[in-house]
Length: 79
Image (cartoon, rainbow, N blue to C red):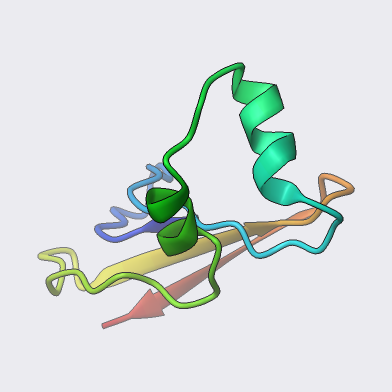
């Protein structure tokens, strides 16, 4: 997950990507959401490379990664 305008107080998910291993993460997400997901849209989310975004006014972004065990890490970058 990426907060493309991190303000230092709270993390707001503005981009979310899925890069985890597994048999079929698309099917698992579809089941969890109980909804159909456009496969073309899914293909843009199942990646480790972010979509482009403008430089934030805050001068910072934050990236949060959560593994399949629920462990998470947050890293803040100056841009």
